[in-house]
Length: 405
Image (cartoon, rainbow, N blue to C red):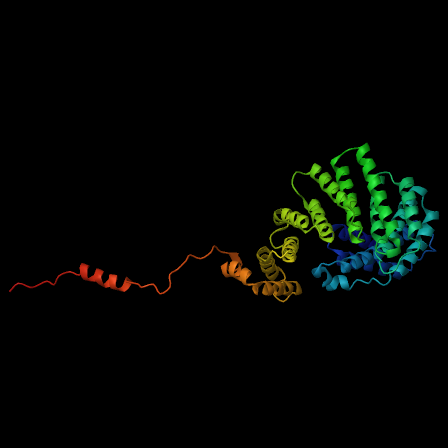
């Protein structure tokens, strides 16, 4: 057991974190490195550069794993939420680990040259920012000052992608602030800062990458305004601007532009422009099937939203068609007992009670496939089939053969 063993575990932990979906493995290896650190009794008072640097890396990765675990558990993905491995990752020692990380950082300031130390200090600032913006239960009174320090550090020390890094910070800050009612205005201002920077970069150095960056900034700003019910015409224009920029970089609708379509539909729904919402959703449906597959969440949710709008607009036959399609997909993807499947089933049962819908849609549907109207049939039709068959046998019957005496 040695410093070299701990360093090897740190490298493995970084590798698994970079691969995505391997968070439990990353946490397992950094825990082993932490155990070695404690057994070797390495503390911040140590004057050895490599020891302090290794300890900083270990506590940094411990915090990173915990923060990512909290992010995963806050997502809506049921499969992630049910992962016992991610649930087992400790998320209660973040503040304690951060305080120890600060002690090692202070020690490194005197042991490292200014350039290398600034890199570690930036890592610390960004981690502190990450911890703050992921806690939406209580507003961090120090976050405004933290954002200023991060932006100043990016301007002073970063050698590449300065604007991209600043845009990302402003967008994350905006999302954090709008979750608190008395901070919404400040949050929207951060979104504006991000859009202005992206616009400036696109004008000075036009490229597809900068167009997509500007499109994303406009999209995030518009989505935030919808979330806080700021539903003026300017919000719709921002969505359309994002769509226009994305289309300039890709002739086919891709995943990014489909996200914009979904949020634009939400905007139209909130402003009660239901026909516009319907048009956007119907337009996006074929591309979602192409990109995500027929049984994807994206397709199922779109079918559900289309059906719900038709239902609200009293177009019951169209509503039945899309809700039936949604129900069949949900039953296959989620199972018959899932609450989402049950909710769609209840809506269909209500629609079946409408005589016109029952006659025109459900009577012509079999196994989820809409059939043509059945041919008209006569009742009590007299059949001569049996008599015709007997007559045929009589005609074709050979005459008897008589033997000669």
